[in-house]
Image 1 (cartoon, one colour):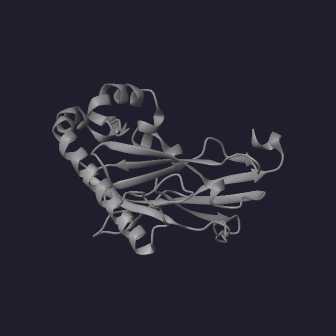
Image 2: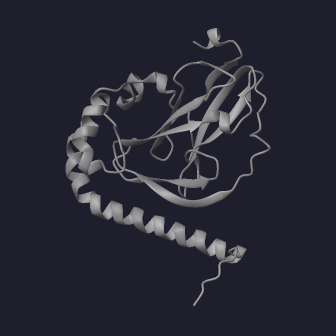
Image 3: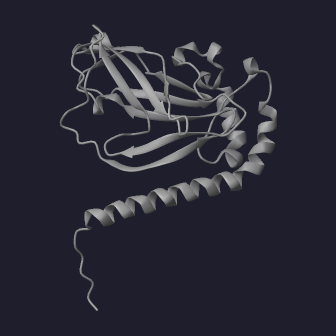
Length: 228
């Protein structure tokens, strides 16, 4: 019998998205159940005083790669507590989350990528959850608020169509953080000038609140010498 292919109707596309969300949720739940016993054992040495604590950056295989992640954490400032890593531009703790936003330098030319470095940190002793909406054209779960030097809000690129491909929950284990790199210039038309950027992350319901980073200034220039 010959198979015939036709565009998927809207209703079926929605069902497919719901199925994908359920599949991702199920896999995420299985990951927690599979890794949690090993994680609880590995986490026992992370219960030191907060000022001496290292936050491991979870790569999705925390119990398996823990020794490697711990070694990496000892060699990077971004794993240090907030008071020892102020350049992380941390926001206030909200529902156990703390959000960091930084850039590798304060100035960029208007023809190069502007990459935001995001850290989503769990400062509690419990597993906590945030919302992850997979949006076409975006690199990660974080939203950005952008303001001009006169504090005027800057809209996202009007030519971009916001298409939510899928939405699901993602968990952060105690004493760990998740790192994302997101292109700011993909979402905003960055002409010459100084801007103030804030990252925002949605916490899973019932809280449904926004976690925010501190406000971070960046400058866009047409002179390459100014951006060094």
